[in-house]
Image (cartoon, rainbow, N blue to C red; front, side, top):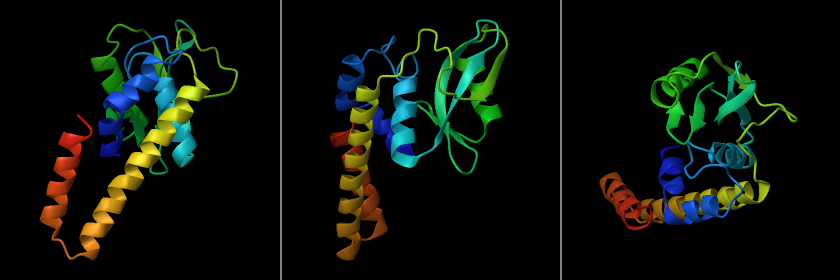
Length: 163
């Protein structure tokens, strides 16, 4: 999942976000619903929200993996409790009463918007980048390239393409 963070911080991903109807300009401010929907599309992970009971609206979106960890633009959090704590400390320390809640169709969205077209484009970008990366790793392994060299290829990939 560390690839996801690198992919969403690429110019290609920000072009998707910038052309969306998102209310924000980053993956943690407005783009979180687009990212969550893209990850839901790719992996079929259930979408969760950090819900503000005071304002009766979602503040942030992520997805829950089969192991119970939560993935959002900040990375993978070991549990919903850890995700909520991280959010409270780093994003909204004075937000009031926040809970983690499964997203439900028809939920009042507040300022955050789902943009299906942007989510589909982001899902395609993530899938394509993961396929390319795995293909390169497979070719290196087939040619008996040592794991250290594969890690260096990963570093090259991250620095050359994803920055």
